[in-house]
Image (tube, rainbow over all chains, first blue to last red; front, side):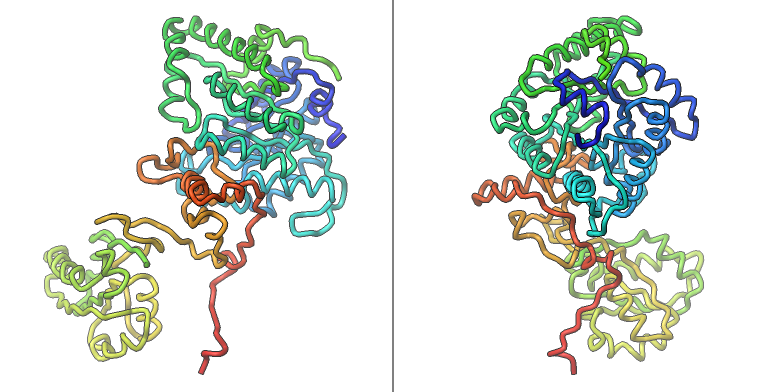
Length: 308
Length: 223
């Protein structure tokens, strides 16, 4: 075992894994984290903690992950290259591992222009692939990026992201192959609404044999309304919600009815991606709607979660 | 070339409220080509300042000069007497020119009239864009002649982030091309796509500004 963590054990056992996302509060309000932890307990195998997602300052992923680990939950610590150089990243990784974190998602990070500190200086000392490579070396060779020995083991299950919907499309599988070459253990994809394009992506992944080297968790997101679908189309680069989904959400009405349709749609997408060769799990990103996870996993037939 | 843009007039005028004699010095190299600080722009600046200061400092005397290359002392040397005879020098050169005047004439008050923006080139009439970040360790051989350090918003070295859409960068899709789309297209055209499979290691930033202010010494040329 690389990390000895629950997520690794589940994926290695061949069980279809479920991970979900928990967004920390915009301040030190631990009650928010605890409430969301309650909503996610028992309905997923591991919980991603976002790292200043969309460049908005929030309680740190290291701290929230440590809290989850203390409570016996399985955190996946998200780590972006936007806010830290290689020294800060490694220092935070030492701390996170010491406090019980066993999973890391290596990300480049949204540009600060999208967040609440657009005049900030970014870092991007490394990119996500270099981060993966660095962490693998820390874990497997016990060496820092600078070449010094690491004092203590670094049992981390190393994750990366993939966006099958970004351009150039041909490069997307090449980029995944590079992440595999760099040493990634699992992948969580961008939110999938365009199933044909995701299917095409997975065919290329399987053709290259990448599915045998990395666990791919398909990213999904429940839509709350037709407006939310349109917002994503107009404001989030690299995700597209196809017209038929927007129309379906429009046809579902408003409020609770629209939300119910969004949950149903999400469960359907999970069932579709589950049939695709090479997909080993799902990653549910219910942004500020963590209550949805229990219902989605129930509807998708993913409960109860195994105890491994 | 170095590309610069004129500062907002009120910002320039704010420094000149009590100036009696002002010497505006343009530079006829890079900043003239990007229409920011050459001879013509010096003339425009002179008139604009007279107007801007007509109520608050109407007695100001403005002299206009333009020299070939403000970043080299020998071109600036003939201005010595005039600089001494003025209260303030307003340099319309890039930041290098402003500092050269300040170093060369230690008693002179030198203010910048431009914001020095980047090293780039004119793409079409009236449009300049960045090409080089001066990182001190050129990687253009690896990326088909397109620089990801200067042209990717996140200076990524291993391919595009998730925000590349239809050839554009998510940071400003109207104005910024995705450098990685350009790299992909170029490498595809010149038959070097296999280069993209190599994992590019973390960059050594010590040759860039992150290593501190830089200096090149050519022992063979030093007198």
